[in-house]
Length: 86
Image (cartoon, rainbow, N blue to C red; front, side, top):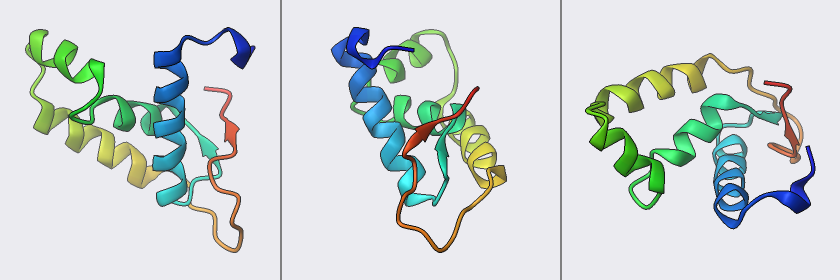
């Protein structure tokens, strides 16, 4: 994966996902971190999910559960510095 070839939207989404991973003390940026970033009110995916008829409250609950199930790392300040293999 070459970050130099990402579009601006993808770069911003990954940066937002990194913030989610940092707040939740996740070692890697994983799929739930990215989805949480994408369903924020200011993100483009929110409108896509709404138009697809997906209830955002339910989607957020599923994402939050997945985030809660992720491993938490303590004792470091280097959260969300890597992309997971997922």
